[in-house]
Every structure is written in structure tokens, then in C-alpha cells.
Length: 145
Image (cartoon, rainbow, N blue to C red; front, side, top):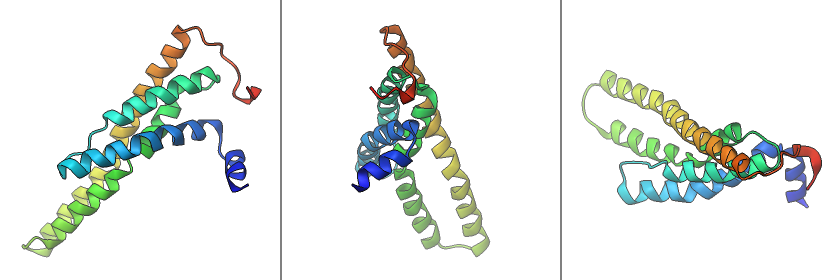
């Protein structure tokens, strides 16, 4: 019952984006958990390619769907930033230096999400292009099927 209500509230673009982002999410989290240092966005690109393909088959543009999937798939960036902030706060040194370091971390967060959105947009665009190349009809998003 609650799932059908959520489905009605979300636009078709967000439904596809959440699908792609949730597919990519465990892979991006696993990439960070294994290394402890870097977050790989390859899964974001491939999941965005998939949902871009599916969205284009329904008459939606793959690029914004892929970008949104990239944002959802990059949520482990917050985990990484939390680890970095904890490390910076634990460092010795003057308070002003730690404050500057935390400010740099705060600037890196939107950059990381922006990079994930670009990777997702590129994947979504490529997925949409592949759907068109395979001759899938362009059906309007509200056509039901």
C-alpha cells in the first residue's frame, strides 16, 4: 500500500534514477570499504547507462535520469567525508589549521557529488543513445506500457 503511494508521488525520472542509484550504491560502498581511501564511480556509470537505456525506451531523456542516479549512487561519499573529518579533528596542531582543513573537506563534498552526477549523466546519455540505436520506439512517459 505504501509502495504504491510512493510510486505515484515520484516522477518517472526519479523512479529510474532511484533504481540505478540503488543498484550502484552497494558497489560504490564496497569500493570504499575495501580500500579505505578511494571511492570508485565505475558502478555509477554502468548503472546510469542501464537506467538511461530503460528511460529512453519510455520516452524520457537518459541524461537527467543518469545524473540523478549518479547522485544517489554516490551517497558513500558521505561515509568517506565522515572518516576524513574524524581524522582531521583528531590531528594535532592549531585550531585554525584544522578549521581550514575541514573547510576544504566541505568544498570537496559538492565536487565529489558533481563528479558522480557527470559520470551518471554520461552513462545515461550513452544508454539513451543505445536505446535509440536499437530502434526502440519513443513512447511518452505517461503512456502506461
